Amino acid sequence: MATQSPFSLLEDFFRNFDTRLQPPAWIVDELQRRIVLLLNHVLMQEKEAMSRLTRQKGRVILFHWRSITLKLVATPAGLLDRAESSSVPDLTLSLTDTSPLAIANSLLRGDKPAVRIEGDVQLAAEVNWLADHVRWDLEEDLARIVGDAPAHALGEATRRSLQALREFIGSRQPATPAGPSA
Image 1 (spheres, rainbow, N blue to C red):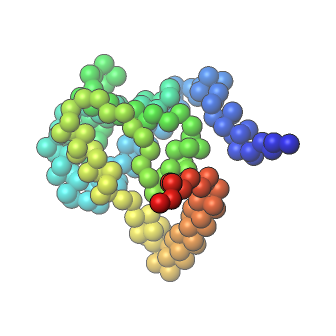
Image 2 (image 1 turned 90 degrees about the horizontal axis):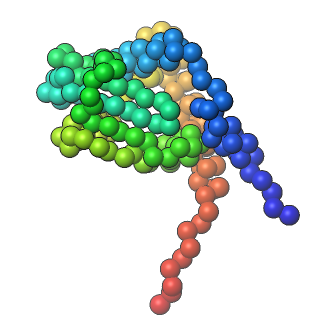
């Protein structure tokens, strides 16, 4: 008797999520504004990232996944802003995997999700550099609120939990078949 994965229910939910449940436009608008604020907060902690974005001022990047889109423009200050809806993107980045669980799985393994890239190659290289080199130091931000010791303890607990989750997911991956022996 074949047993069904407990994650198949979640897969079915996420597969039909964007057709069954559409959030109101004002929620989407507010979430996009918050994402831009978070991205800029992270960018401001890395001067080289801001310098690279300054060279790309006015360039428009469209991020696309399923029915979710976010159009951003590089500002003269080296930050990001939401682009006008009528603006033509210089670069389009589309996540090719439609399953959020598969994307989360690849991120937990430390891999980048599969992305289809269309448009300006130099701008794509800059975005790739940002993805590779800019990291949010959440522990530092948390330390400003609760202090160094509690922030470090929470950070350490989170790292241990993520490591355990990575090991669990790794143990669930099917073994790769061995090649022919000589």
